[in-house]
Length: 116
Image (tube, rainbow, N blue to C red; front, side, top):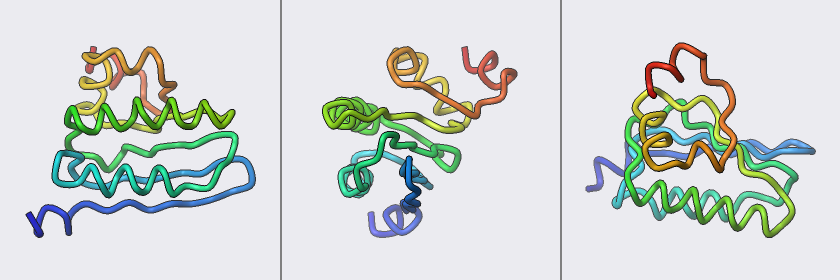
């Protein structure tokens, strides 16, 4: 498990109007606590962007964390936005219906069609 955790990491960038949390690796039961902690530690801004471009797998625990984060950010008057999910994550977002409730930006049209 230690090896898996070392391959997973989160980087946070803060600007005046947004916070971007960049996730790299596998988001699953072994890493979701670190993912959740990074989201909840992000300073309050009008927009919380979660850059998924480096995510290789998004499990059900990751999906639940994104749903909870959306509710938490909205309660603070902000918006959660997902950025550039790879095709494997796009398929999860479509299959769970998450793509309908959380805005997704940065995905190329051909990748969106391939994921559907």
